[in-house]
Image (cartoon, rainbow, N blue to C red; front, side, top):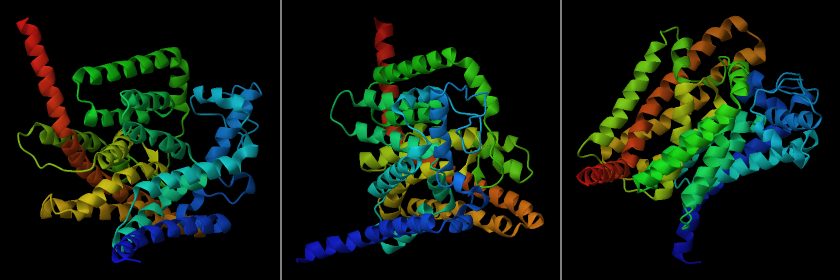
Length: 425
């Protein structure tokens, strides 16, 4: 074995250990279910009918109820383990003809968890032991484990949205429309997939094509809203609001800390102003990065920012931070961006560890039933976690604006020149 092969194996070893540790850890949790309590607390149910993949169970039960002719939006679904009404858009129920039901729960949950893991392992490639440890602490954390244990919808949409950067790698002239199809087919179901349109601003070189893609999306979404307005308004009020445990959101930061919520609007305006400042400055740092790293980062950033700013979310939606990590790790390694920027990126990444793990401090309540101790700590940990996410969002906004800046300025110049020529005619 030559020295080059040995070096390659050494570089691959941290990644191999990282993947093996995650797979082993998740396998042990499913083997010893009571251990879930130490990671997701009371959101894990010990009842056999509710474990595993409770959210997936609800979706499969919805297919069964739909096939049985039950109006599951208004009538409790007898096929659901908790006999809940459905609070999801009904258009995915068109897939009920496939015959999917609760009998497929373990198979469906395993496929989704495996697909989610395969995507994460394919894009996260730690080169050093420190990176492997950092990624392990982020990936084997309460938010990610909650998504896996529940078999939550967001893992399914994560897998489907992962097709966007894959389609954009194609050489076909139809690649943008294939990505568009994924985004806007999913948008009516969860809304946040529409934010992934941001990725087009990275690569589409013609403002006319951007306009066409956007117009087509708006027509599609408007038509959907117009034809389903009653259902949309009903679901808006019917969807349960997350409580204070394993949740995050921009406004929730200040609610948890007992502060005026208008501060969330002020911070939002600051983020927008910072992004615009980066784009509009005549000179700014450039980031010579692989285009695929940029696609994944912007996909994750778009969903994370959209959900954080507009909703209160259960923490499983933080899985959309994971596609941002490959680019952040690359920036933390390179010296091309300068020492100050490199250190700021490292702080951003390190900030994710306490952010993802802070709620572990309130697990004591769910194990020992100490209400007086926990409620205050739940509010404090939630507020601090959301505050750290605000800092992460601000740093991510600077990076996203830096990535988009060259093409946005090119599109703006092209639009201006075309308008100028049109006036001359």
